[in-house]
Image 1 (spheres, helix red, strand yellow):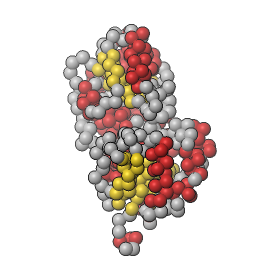
Image 2: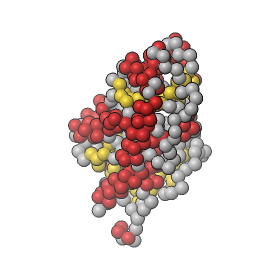
Image 3: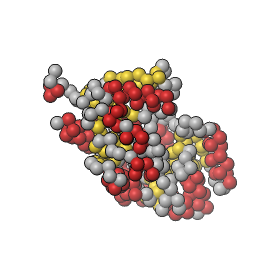
Image 4: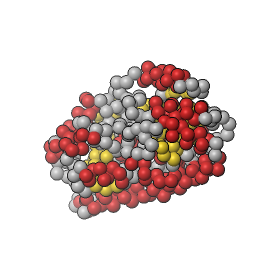
Length: 364
């Protein structure tokens, strides 16, 4: 069949299977798959057992994986299988952060991805030194204007900006919960992940008279002893004088958790292994949960819809938290601003329109 008479076929290439643990790259790929119904997608599924239900669209290609995480063996399978299918599709869409292994991958691009057009969505940069050693895979997509400037400065050439999306029907605006307030931190056990600063900031707010429960929703990474790390956070919170702290592991129902809290606290000194725009922040804003963030360049896109404190400044972060918990009118204003921002900049229609236009441009 002539190419113009059939739907385009696109390979979604992620670090792990699309039905494995939900990282930012996997989430973005799943959102692209759902947003563009007129495209035939090829994607990778885990076997022999699945961690979650696979997408219902497209063609799944199985790779052997015991838990769906991006371990070296499944990653090698994905790269080799992707090299085969990259030559059978019209376009390859890669979702990979730029870390220490990316430069080698980028230099092997002709071997691994062939001659088809490539879109590379960059969830984040985990190793700044890798930027100078890497080559662009094709048209590069950043999640924020700040990241786009960094990539262009690193000579990545054609860089577009497509912010991530939030399914607004899945994350409805909710009223402020009643009862004893809870403050949420959600993140990873990374050295600069922000959990320790969140505890210090909460201690500052408690010292200024604020009363609340601090909830730490921690997601472990492969190879980490998550239980020991969780216990270390409990000990740190106790030493800081916090009387009410709940340290949890992976949260299956983030909807219910966000519905139960009043504020999202996300103060990492740098993003490191986190995506350029953390999806938890978007989900909190969509739900109507005011957020206090580090004043990092990537978060400038949130404007006045969030509060920002200098990165690494636990005292200023804690002062903002104490103020916000004591100001119901300001809480309402920020909750409404956050929802409006998500509807305007991070809705599914805008996401689908931008990626649809990019696909048509590259396939023309």
